[in-house]
Image (cartoon, rainbow, N blue to C red; front, side):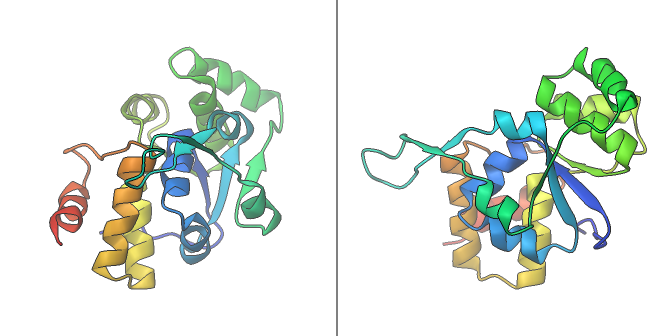
Length: 189
């Protein structure tokens, strides 16, 4: 069962989740539908630069710049800067093992009691070891929650997953709790 979100909870998207959700071409719908507030750490936003155009044309691998500004202006996504020295100190601890974007995401989540959305196995492993109280969700959980709340059609949902696979180059691992669901959707034609 997907994670149940509450409207007062903050979900901090790391760079890989930004890439994956942006690749769907319906990130705004996803953020609007899931009952939570979405944010991204300043450093993670800076790391999410582009996705591929996708499709079958010769420019399928051409880069498409990620533009989060419409989501920010509409209030669906907030960029979070540092708040205090404690967050910076916690960042240093996480940065010893993670890239800066993931480390800032984890530090902010630690101090602001937020959920971390990441598909990075190392980040999930470090969080489990250093801050097991921080809930972690993945792209597949977010898409599953959105699909259930929005009652999307199979063909539409299949295209969403094709876009994530082709534009963001992401395929969930077999250990992902929603791998079978994802695989069934891609196989169903």
